[in-house]
Length: 101
Image (cartoon, rainbow, N blue to C red; front, side, top):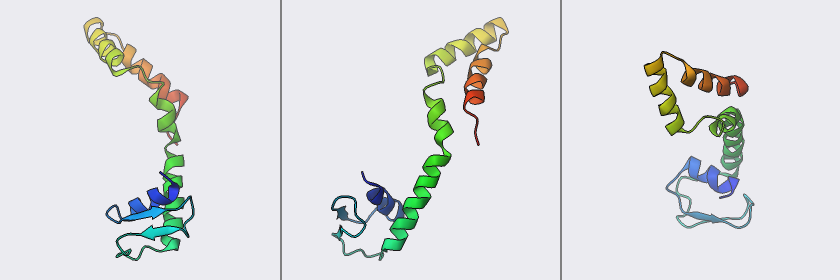
């Protein structure tokens, strides 16, 4: 899916269109563009979606650093049984390594 496609869908997920290549000037509207989505709106939405994506980099960085949910459940069980804080320490280490901006 191109940035143009993602932008149009973000503006109106019910519109019907195709994009030839990756050009905002080569959009074919199959529904006649009933909401009159403009080139400027598409370009502005691209900027907005990119900023949102960039702002969530820390989430993507954390995703594969966390222990699996199975391991986390096991840590929590042992922590409760043994009075330890292994799970909290494991999660905090990932959060510390990839802080939220």
